[in-house]
Image 1: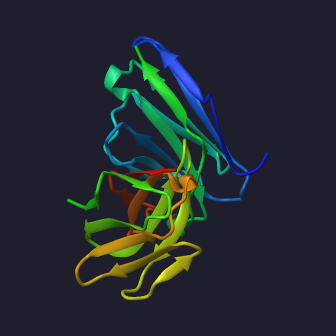
Image 2: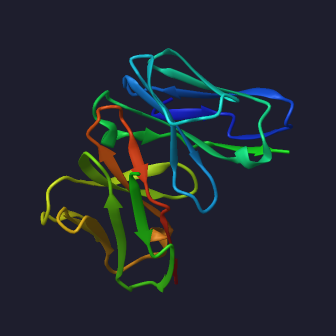
Image 3: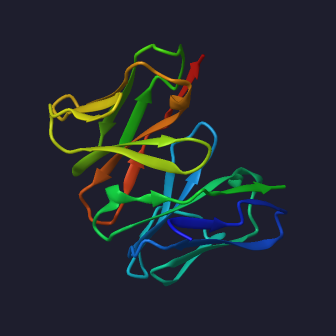
Length: 113
Length: 112
């Protein structure tokens, strides 16, 4: 499989559930990103990892917990979310220092009930 | 606060029309301006602009940057139904953190 893949593509969870989103890239990149896209709002950067180290946390609530075990995989662990966290969560990757070459995954459509 | 604003937020045109999408920005440490097309889910890269006045062109799409007035435009000529998408503008900061600031996007619908 090529490019950036994300699983699951759709997720419905209750506010007390714990779930994880997974992102995998097959492009040989060393930077990975999590974005949140809510209706009628700009695409919002959440986290950046360069060489597995977190370099950016855009004031994201602690109920979102990222994990980057290696340069090819990125997870977003979710717990005690709120209905307003319902959104499309996009993962992207790029070469480090070349953020304009971000390739995006198809996203996970998350609904919190 | 860094900010990117796109206009219009939505646009409906007919096939064959020419459209101009606008993007203005106020950021510290500007590095480049990017345009993406988002159909269904994943945004796909269109253009990167770093210098004023140099037009980037790809088929019927073209874009130009004005760093003095802090804006960019994306032109699409002879629109087709396949151009229907959300067009995103983003500014890359020179902080080397990989941070992109996105605008709200312009939703373009091209009717047959």
